[in-house]
Image (tube, rainbow, N blue to C red; front, side):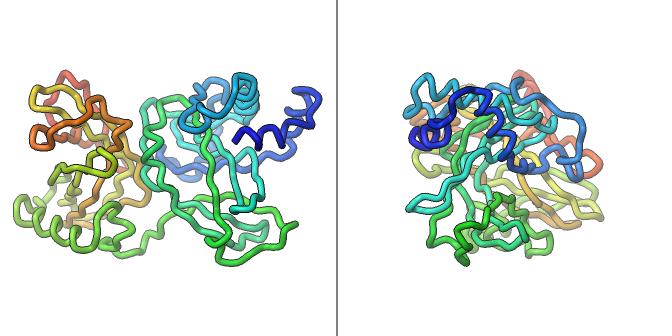
Length: 331
């Protein structure tokens, strides 16, 4: 990343020129809709970018010197305000490389909670709206994005991942690929982290052990097991006993050891996670090792909890209670 910053800013003689360049080439921020607001980009309730804490992580922290980090902070603080209670992706620089088309962004979290993203489906589009590349990026390894904070993240679309090659002079824009609502619920892509056979196994297990009860809505952990790279995988069943379809947008998960000590506490944001009336659905959540407070734990000693559901008008949201009070938690 260092050479990119040098390539962009190296010819600038002053911060004023940097500021002009930032505002001249501003991209459109993408919102994931975690606030539950329709068309959040139109909201006037916003937070100044400089009010968010900029966290350098991974290669950004290791490869940038102090001067470059200060410059990146300056770029971040010059961005337009972010919609309050939202998760936004703001592209601030693009570069054509030998490997592909690189987009540097800030992911800005203006909520009061940490959010862990699993996979983020993005695409590149032309000014005419033509999609030239689609890619789902795995962000698990980067860990959760803290409340009221930002993080620089790069997205590389390799040339062999393009569905068609645009002309060099055509500018490309990053866009968020929202999952289509009419896809079948047993689609492997929508039951993230589970194969078709695993999904069938857990759907059958949920139906046999604790079937959907009329008039009740709940979430329950079916299993916790070892995940990738020393992480954890938590399989959850969503039950909807109402006469209408429900959408779940947020899921917090708390993992304790047998002594009651917290092993992990994570918060997931879901896109288009709908459960039809009088039915259930399973989903696997990966907890990376970087989000665990304890390492080398015994799976048999762990218990995963989901805080009690707190419904709201357009989406069912789940709010984590005080860890000292475990009443209402589902095991």
